Image 1 (cartoon, one colour):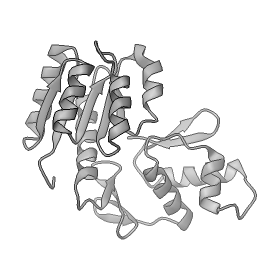
Image 2: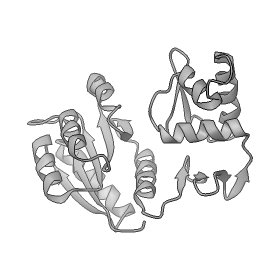
Image 3: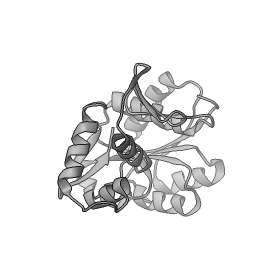
Length: 224
């Protein structure tokens, strides 16, 4: 971690909020953690402190998490946002996903997954960050444009490299097969959905399991 970052945790369930903040503090002693019990309080804290990271529940009194994110995104495209959602909040979650989320997690939180996504967010925030981590041991080096597993390079073809970079650039965004095809082949050949299926299948063999999610209709997105 290159600097001391500020994290705002917005959650109306007091015990849940306190427990997760305590857990985060044990792992990241250098992070300054602020807390809010509802969306309105979170908004006021954001305006005063401009945190680097926001972890927010979607269902909160006074101002829901979705409205909070919408208001923040009107002012700030840099803050890293992690959403916590109950299964009953699927409608809000679907509306929040396009708002440049770093991740979303379904309650009850899996602490290992939370740890991993905070690690990833910190890596993105670091000014000298030049690596994108697909797992604890697998990362893409933006400088050399190489993929590494335990610091050993994994060879990629030109199209596999282009696909991986496209996924990283659009992390957690659903990409249509036709869009991927045109980005990879630049309209230089006739569109064939099987070409994308084959390319995705090959890339999957070289990156951590389940990083690429199939979406109904032949679409894909990079998740973690």
